Length: 184
Image 1 (cartoon, rainbow, N blue to C red):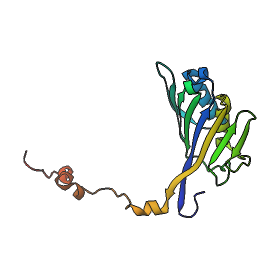
Image 2 (image 1 turned 90 degrees about the vertical axis):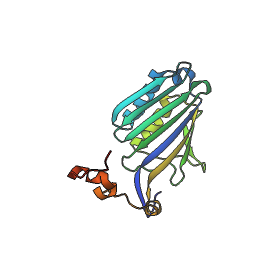
Image 3 (image 1 turned 180 degrees about the vertical axis):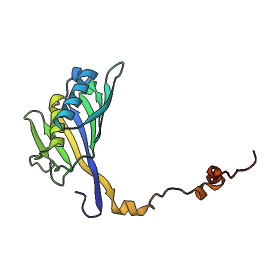
Image 4 (image 1 turned 45 degrees about the vertical axis):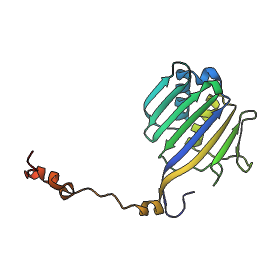
């Protein structure tokens, strides 16, 4: 999970829903309600939203949350929706330990890890994800759960950003002090 040399910035959860009802995935009202239910159950702070129903079929939408975002795009004709949740809130236990992939089986309501063990997690973020899957009435779901952040090796590979000085701008840097530039 991160480890030495890793500064955690947030949790990124990608949810792929399969076997959800066409009428739910094709309704911006119902898709919006599902995202709001997830946000409320996960104690996420919604600060804005935008949803769009496409003329033929499908919905795209986003809840802007103070912790980051929750977004969705649906393909009702395939019973499929792709969702993206990023939160910079407190770290939460990964449902499958070091494994990042979790599967939901709608036929029996179980959550399993790649190694076949039961997924075990608690906390607000897990509640948001499970609420979303249940409200969407998905037949199954694939979830990728990842910590995101800065890896020391990557941050050391590039020089740190610095604010430019007036000298860095050449003749433009002197304009504030009254120095002129080239004659135009």
